[in-house]
Length: 452
Ligand SMILES: [Zn+2]
Image 1: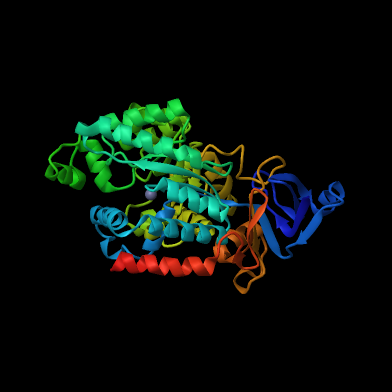
Image 2 (image 1 turned 90 degrees about the horizontal axis):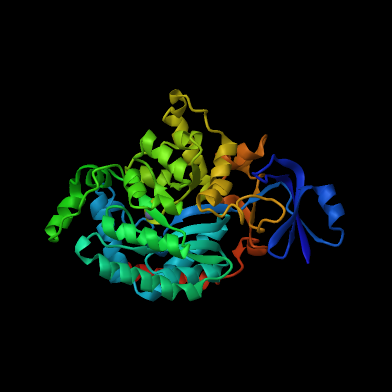
């Protein structure tokens, strides 16, 4: 069966906006994009859905999430001024207070929030990979789940490496056409350099996509460049020392072979021009997380510079514990305004506009995740991942230009319809794949355990 979605505007992102446009969907794929009359003529027997005063665009690609932490929305704010204490509380709460069932419920609720906000694909960093993969499958969401690996103590590299490999091998059976597996050595400060080298080699050999937190905090920078700071002190207290690479994070990742995997790097706040050149040279992707970086006081990544250098940049909400929402329209607005507020144009960069912001939220994310041949634009042959956003609410009217209205006046709460691989996962105000009322009750149970 062919279905045609018609709307006042179609924004394919990879080409210009179409007034009174239509998108034809056949099976899991986009079969045609164009003016309504033209598309209707091509598919005369198709079922037609009229979306009215709305914009149809590629589904949002949220390329950095931690869905299993959704139950911690607003839970860590007392620790926000101290990144080390913040990290410790996340880890301790997840490992000691949340059961496997809690992690599933938390991830599933995160998936519900995502599809409600028009997100069709996530790049999710997960400690409980199998659980998160199930949550994505149940919600009908597309995603790469990057199983996390840790190990700052270089004395136990072999054990940690074997553990990571075993985990990955067990997870392979949970892969589907929509939900696939990746590997995430957690960060340069939680993975000892020799372990990082082995994991990068493994990812390359196994053709596993690799994602890593990189160049996020001042504490990380102190450990990388001079072997000092709060992480070095904490490791010394635990009885081992971390062999600092004494260079920037990005140069360290180049030396360790991580950049050879064309990784997805979350944050990249603390990068200099040499680092940006390396990111471009190796084809690394960046998950830009401007709200999380601001909320945790880490600063702001040089977005316009990275884009100007031709780096593949997408947007990530990060976990809702540091955001506190998974909403890529809001994230794109914040990215754009923060770039302009920082006077990024003064360094000679072009001022970013609403089209740039929408590209970041869609095609940029797909490029950063190396899946641009699958999703991220409305193009014949790509997967039918799309979202319809209303344009006629009070806060959007008048809407002179659809891209500006979407980026500057809209949010995920204006989403009318979310389609993943041709399947409608959110419509008429309800998620179609999950019993939201039942799940909400289970989330509250999880919260009771978390705060007990
Ligand atoms: Zn993260």
